[in-house]
Image 1 (cartoon, rainbow, N blue to C red):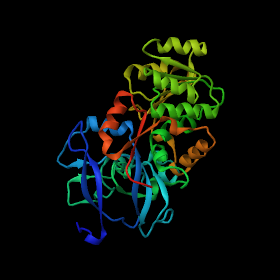
Image 2: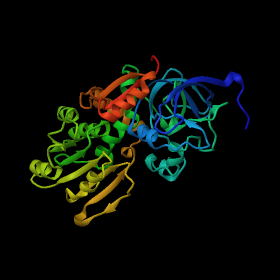
Image 3: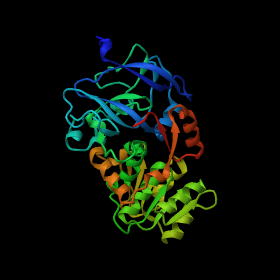
Image 4: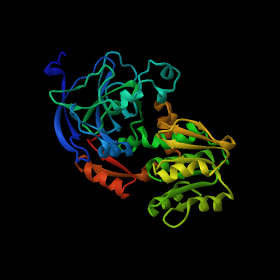
Amino acid sequence: MTRPADSDVQKIRAAVLRRRGGPMKAESLEMEGPRHDEVLVRIVASGICHTDIRYVDDWYEDSDGAVILGHEGAGVVERVGAAVTGVRHGDHVVLSFQSCGHCLPCRSRHPTDCESIYDLNFGFRRLDGSNALIRSRVRGHFFGQSSFSTHVLATERNLVKVPKDLPLEMLAPLGCGLQTGAGTVMNSLAVPAGASIAIFGTGGVGLAAVMAARIVGANPIIGVDRVPSRLKLAMELGATHVIDTRREGVTDGIRAATGGGVDYVVESTGDNRLYRLAVVLLNPKGTAAYIAGENGPSSLPGGRRALSIVQGDAVPQVFIPRLIEFYREGLFPLDRIEKFYDFGQINRAIADARCGRAIKPVLRVSEA
């Protein structure tokens, strides 16, 4: 493979994962400049998502080398390829998941169903198998970005241009976790006004679902968790009831709030007991949504349904601006759930997320 000339090499600094469980360590690396359809983005901030943490815990070191994680990046466009028309130098952007743009689901505006979604987001390479990181055995392109880095290459498919008057560090988590939680309520489930909903887990994804449920007029909105501070915040952000699983049974709590079951459940914890309980608590014709669950759609007795949700079935270029407008209107106060860390504190931020000290950690990588 032909290597780029030194004049087209971008020096970067990234948090690299070299062994299962971490820690990630900062390293200086080199990256190709953008291809004709790529955009070079200087990362200002990156959210830390549960998917990043799960990858740290479960990743198997292999012969293909170390990796750079991160998939809730936000930054400033520095260079664009010749075929790029939607953004230009100096634009502020939020980065989301990658899709190919060519398959039938992508052409039908359903990028979360992209036929290449796994390879593009978890393959640590471009779709043609190449890796923009050079002179090393470190792999990037996680979710088409690998945003635990000072610079990334992305495409117009996973870039969303955002207003310059709002802080990029605040907007970064919109690219995955908050989009997923809110999109599950608004897009995947299309929860109508007056419907009852229980949200299992009030972390970043769950609280985004709580805020979205309030926006659409669901009632009651029941937050379920075992961390009192998160439940308190859930009440402030729109929950009408909360269930502390350390002190109260979920079934009894929901019956007390509704007199029976619920119309919708959003399961974001991954806890096996709650996973099984979600469908049990549904009213007839109710729907349980499993965030990135392993099971596909299924029909259950009484017209009940179980859905596996990816990225809230969102088109990022449409849905993220919508969430930003909700923020401006005071309806989606994402800043209430964020906690900021310097880039060098990435391992501490992950530790805080694991133990509940941080709901949505956000790394400050560079100045806007």
